Length: 249
Length: 53
Image (cartoon, rainbow over the protein chains, first blue to last red):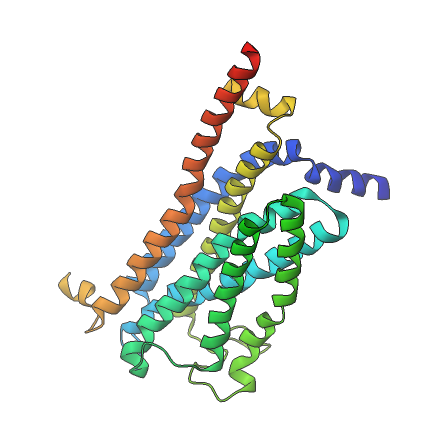
């Protein structure tokens, strides 16, 4: 039984198998993501009711919150993959971490920018140094630091090791972002969904939000696989299976 | 139709947010597809050179 489980896991670690399996998954993840994002956006922009306090400006939430959730989720994936690569020396784990970083950075940037655009009419300010905004900005710096460190170190294995350590050390920022609205006196509003209670948001607004959240997740899954496949193909270029694939195209 | 695009008086804020999201997510998704073409091109040339020698 244990042997079968380990065989299953090692199959995933094999670049050749990963390339084949991911090729089948990408179209599914990609097209379903596109569908969910389109439906979620249309619902959020045109069908969800107007907010009694914020009017139509609150519709930014359907980009802002899923982007923020993704910024944190991808970071945890990146740090976990880095840890796996560090501990078990599985190259594919390092590839997943490296492939995730730019996507995570993009979502963090989106969360910050849409939050800023939303803040201007609502709070009267493009930016405040409140705990949540500041810790999310630090998250962006961590992503950019990861990417800069990777390109600064020539030996790929040393680069992966250094980046994995950076990612793992930065994990402390994630609970800080999440609990910042509880621990400190913040301008940013408190949790309405990611808490142990029932969500305090109305269902007609919750549905497009969850559609976008799921859509963004599948979007990440498809894009990280496309990026990882590229890196795997390039890294394994001297192997026979890669030559076969390139010749057949 | 016009009121839909005006979003109360918040049209500029809402549409710029969605617009920026579309551009950023679009770029992040499409760039690796171009990279893949470049890799196949480079490797094809490399294998051809190796076969000659």
